[in-house]
Image (cartoon, rainbow, N blue to C red):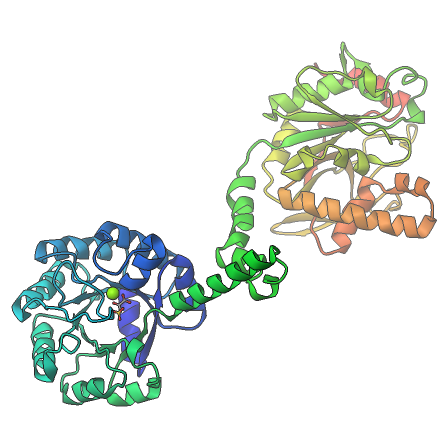
Length: 541
Ligand code: SPV
Ligand code: MG
């Protein structure tokens, strides 16, 4: 795929600019700087990954490992500098198989013997392998590749070896004949003169590639005019990073402080971005949270309610007995049957009385001055991730919990469609809900005790599910609602007025969605003595 991409680029662009990378991060920077392709430099890989000279001292496998890292970090094609092919044709055959199957777009093979030394090393006058041997490497590479697009560059060091222009041209022609897709003509003269001459005498359409490290003042436009098709900036990124590292290390060591270098070093957030840290968040949400079947559950049972006095004179309401078990035990049993393993209760009023084996207990010591959301968020460990929230006085059927757990939304609440309770048993403050929807689902438009008859079409039963993101929205909206109330009342007792419904409405007002699952039966709440009697009558255990 990337080989095809490289060929398309060669066709569509007058000249390709290729950046030399030494590792995956530098490859990424090269891509972001707008280069057309990556040159996986043997010089750079040897230096950066092993601090070794460029002299075939790294194995092919070590080089390939580095090249793979680069290829995976970028979407542009990678051309691997494969030195001399790591040996004779047998090595070349294996090498092509490995590089091609790793998705590398193309390779470069040079006519150095094995082992080689970098052509730029001072005093180096390489003895090259003879033409035929190099032509054999190229034809072995071309015969091995599976896709017709895999790109093989034949590189001749004839000019560097001092073999002269005729030899350089002769070799280039021989390699072209052996099947090379391009010719890399290397020079280490301080001017591009020999490149100009070579290109002028190169009559073929087979593209020419250059690495102008030693004649850096040449301009891209000049090279293009000479007929050069690919220009490689082979090692400047590596050298720039050496300069930068030396610089900051020296200063930090000297001053003993990081402050002096801070303005010169890339912010952490930029490194986070480069390595794809934001993907972690979205992948968590997509692949972990979404499929995590069993969230934890938090039962908020902290409050003291006058409406049930004196049944709660010496114990919290959660411990009221309904047919041999407390409300809390019924809730825990139901949640466990529905597959919820981790269950926490937030206690407040007479909290010392609450103990159910195997469930976590949090304490909202400030229960008298705070509301339900405060209690819920007291269970701080449970509410960081996907969690289910159940009011402490609500009994639900297992089927309702199952239905809710199937929701993959950020926030889902269970809404009862028809109000069962008669006028003779008025609930003090039902959580009325006005919903809207379309073919994709139903969500809350307004929620609160204040909605009047005719304005609502359901009642929130006190059971909800929050994804990790939903939990974040809840925390943020709570903080906002608190600030608003504090500003309005100027006193602390107003904290109690921030109800769950206020916070849900806040989320909705901020543009968030609170999705709805509807039920027509399968729950009780126990707010009054009358409710309690009914629970005794109707609860099936
Ligand atoms: C490399 O970058 O490894 C090269 C180019 O092969 S040069 O260093 O000029 O030989
Ligand atoms: Mg090299």
